[in-house]
Length: 329
Image (tube, rainbow, N blue to C red; front, top):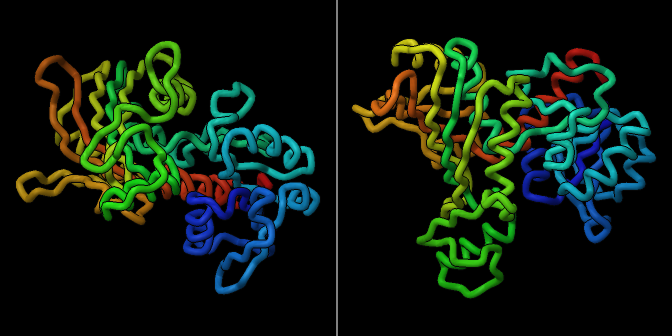
């Protein structure tokens, strides 16, 4: 399997290589691809050194799969060029997510929709992935009506510059700012850019992507996204109203049997999901389960995942694994 990783020198690209190696993805030839300023850099994979190449050279090499994590503009320009050359693209950016002609995939939920004709496949937003995975089996059983989600997102979701800003602030060093304000000892209700409706792009991704993933517009989502001074791992407070009633023991059973999800809900022993615990893991962790006592059929829950792994790199690699296993590439 000839595989290209586009954006290999970036934060998610580095994790992508780590995940491909850990999961022993069947790579016979690896192309590490980045922007012109990174061409010629050396990176290692499975104890072998590779030289970073440019996008045009990668297209010409006709890989079977190209996993993109290089930003929306790059994806919009180059994903179609790879697709025309016969490559199947799994794209991590927001470029294709809401395109009605492209699938938006969380493998545990809807990979079975993929066909050989899907040459550009979208990876959902990191916050969306962990939320829909935690809710997927509950939705089947109780049918969601409305989700209210507030996120507590790590600086790694913004990128290297933001991680450096937090590190500098902790060390008392003045440096380049990724945010309009300090992030240390702070919480910024500002993830991505503000839109005309007063929401941020991140909040609207959370509002729209779940309906596409579930192929179901019968429920609604409203979101508030907040950046907090953690270096990795996103947390979410989710309030979900169902059509049908539930019992908490049933809910715990359903969550514990959901693929890719770990139930961590033992408050008597201070056991609940936290970013520090989810770090470097591929599972989505769910806890703090309790009924919303203010209205019927409504559940409160706390969801945590490593945003660079299941929220980005691992989900993309799992899509690629599905393509290979089902002979779609």
